[in-house]
Structure formats: C-alpha cells, structure tokens
Amino acid sequence: MQLLNIAALIMKHLHSLKEIIIYEDDHFVFINKPAFYSSLDDRHDDNLSIIKLAKKYNEELRLCHRLDKETSGILLLAKSDEAYREMAIKFEKRVVEKTYHAIVAGQLMVNEQEIILPLSQTKKGLAFVDKKEGKPSKTIISTLKLYKHFTLLACKPVTGRLHQIRIHLASQNFPIVSDESYGGKKVFLSQFKPKFKEGKWENEEPIIKRVVLHAYQLSFTAFDKPYLVTAEYHKDFTVFVKHLEKFDA
Image (tube, rainbow, N blue to C red; front, side, top):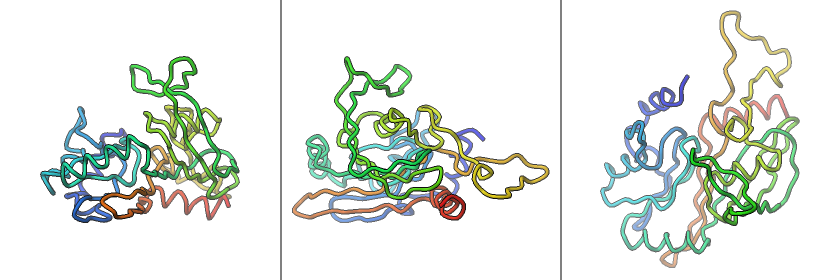
C-alpha cells in the first residue's frame, strides 16, 4: 500500500488536534503526532498536516519545530508570539533536550555514545555525511534494550539537521528498521518467530510499514517552569516491540 493511501486511512480516525494532545497550559500545547502526518502543509495532500489541524483548534498556534512525516511522537506548539519567540531562542541555543526512540537492526551496546559527523543534504532531500562542507552534527545514543537481532535505542540529537538521527545511525552500520532511504530493511515476523506459518492465500506483510523512529520526550524550562513531557508509542511501534519481547528476547 502506498504511503498516501496509508495516511488517508489514518486520517479517518483523527478528526481534531484535541485527540492527540498530551499536555496543554497557558503557553504551549504538546501533541503526540501520528506517523504519516506532515508537520506543515504537504504539497501532495495538505489535509494531512498537523498545522491545519492546529489552526482549527486554535488559530494562534504555531509549530516550534518539525518531525519527518513517517516519524511519530512529541511535537510542541506555541500559543502566542511570546511563547514562540521564547522557544525559537531555546532551540537555537540547543537548551531543549529531545529524546527519540529507534529500533535498529543488529545488537549495539552503548551508553551516552557520541556520533559526531558533519552532514549535508542532496537536492532530493536526503542527508549524507560530508566531511568537507557538511554542517557540524552531533547525536548521543544509549541502549535501552538488546534483542537477538535488534536494539532499542534512545537518541538525543544535540544539533537539528535533516534526518540527523537516521543518517548518523546508518553511518555506524546500524540503520533504523524500515528506513530504506538509509539502508534499513523491512522486518517480517517470519524472520524470527519459530514455526511461523504464512496464510495459504496471503502474502506476508512487514510488521511495521514506516521508519521505526519515535520522538519520545521533550525537556526544557520556560517562563520559570520546568517541562518534561513524554509521548507514548503509537500502536504500530508498540506491536513491533511486543513481537520482539515475545519472539526475539
């Protein structure tokens, strides 16, 4: 099934921003973005954008940062120009701590391991390591759980380059599952479930149909208030983890 078709199916189940709000106060709205929604208006189908849903909820809302279309997880929206400016400065000064969870192929045991590689992007919108002209980029990764064939990682991007976590992990020969743009492969249950039997009249589908990357947590202080907000995994990510726990632990 094509990406837009999947997104269209998801859209039927999300009618308003209110359904995905995690936390809201006088300054900010934190949401848990589903996969296949663009942060800003999408040139192919702008009905699938978070900003469009946000404006229907509150015309003053502005996105403080973005997530890739296939990436799920926490997004921060400002409720005023003052709040937006406050966060723009904090993101620029890199005092907002962002934590992502990713599942990669292979076993990787690390603790606060730094990946420091300069990055550039192609005209087609893909990132690549560019040691001559690339922008300085840094990601800190730690192992959360080892499985037989996979690893669940916590990734903290210090800088905010295009596809930074994805290309940094791929550069270490640990691409994110299903991230085919950077060498990741789709995963099928038959690869690790004992005595797996495919239905007689159906082709096996991948366990998860998107890049297995989730924006898990945001932490910062603003307006003399500390914020630490977490976004739970979406169903497809949760199902994948449950399969790993059951058949690949």
